[in-house]
Length: 220
Image (cartoon, rainbow, N blue to C red; front, side):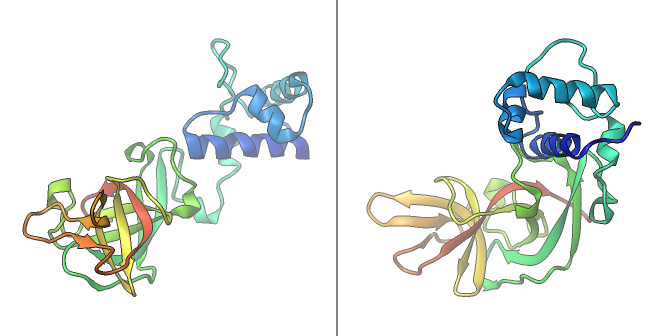
C-alpha cells in the first residue's frame, strides 16, 4: 500500500471514528465539513486518492455512505490497547460490582476487562472511552432480565430518559434501577421485582452516573 499524506490520514481517521460511534460511514458532505473544505469536489478528490491507495473500499454501487475503510486500513489503527479487538468486538474496563438489590458500597476500582461483540450494543454506539462494565448483584431487576452476576455495559452520563435502566449513586452507594417520574412525587428509581420498593428522590437524593445499554451473561 502507498503511504498516506497527513491530510489523507486525518480524513481516514475521521471515517473510522465515525463508523465506530455511529455504525455507518460519513457522507462526502460530512467529510467536507470536517476537513474544512468549501467545495465537495475537494472531498471527492481526497476519497479517490484513498481508494486508489487501497485504504477505502471500492463501492459496488454509488451510495451516500460508501466510504468504508479496507481491512488493511483498519489494521493501521490497532495499537496495544486494542490488540485483542477487531471490528466485531470491543473491550471495556470492568469497574467492579454495583448492587441490583440492597444497596452496598459502590466499587469503582478496575477489576478486569470485558470483551464482547459490538452487535450486542445499540447504534449509534457511544464513544468507547465513555463505556465501562459493571457486575450486577442481587435480584431487584430480574423482571428486566438482569440477573445476579450479569455484566452490564454502561455509558457514562448524568442524565437519561424516563424508563431507562440506569446506574444511580447515593452518597457513595450505587444501584441499578429503572429511572421513572411520578407526577406527585417526582423522580424515582423503580426495581423490576415486586419484593423491592421504589426509591424516591424526595426521600433520598440520588444522581445518575450512567445508562445501561447492554448486557453480557457468563464468564469474561
